Image 1 (cartoon, one colour):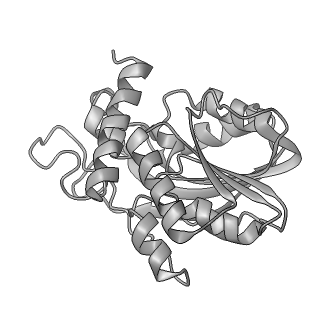
Image 2: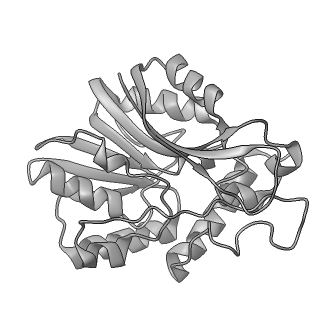
Length: 252
């Protein structure tokens, strides 16, 4: 049985390489092309439109499974926290939304991603963005400090999702909201898939059952939970479960 630390190390290694090489974990080389016992990774195809081309070129690594910024109700002066911020695309979009009186914070546990995000910040000249190193289950953020949380295809990579949503609840202000796009499963993911480190990093093995995922959110204390967008992913072979991208929002 793999440990949470083993999962995190595998994810760090994969996404560290992506940050350096600018290749997606969810492409055809991630997962199970050579092993019939495995399941292929999802093929991410959500791309940013109506966004500055320089920002997209620098900071969109093609790792998302939705558009949480489109539903996040960000306003001038707010503090926004992006979980698993990667190269920074959603942080920079949030920084534009909240303006110079607001702030956008990116949280990531991978050194190479943080280095790339900070280079992008400097290159793009976005003064009201900052990036912190940390894990979602134990955020280096003060309680009751954030107006909005966003995250794009990251919570499925977190071993302890209950702790992740508990931390999200802790750092949000009263009345604050989160908007998260993520991968969930429809049907049971086999144990052999759960044990596969490549498929953890490939956005498959860590996916929680959709109903369980929504229940975790409710048990963390959030209210007004709504799924604002949903779409299935078509995998490359017949398997015993499905994968769905959902974008959900809820309020503290």
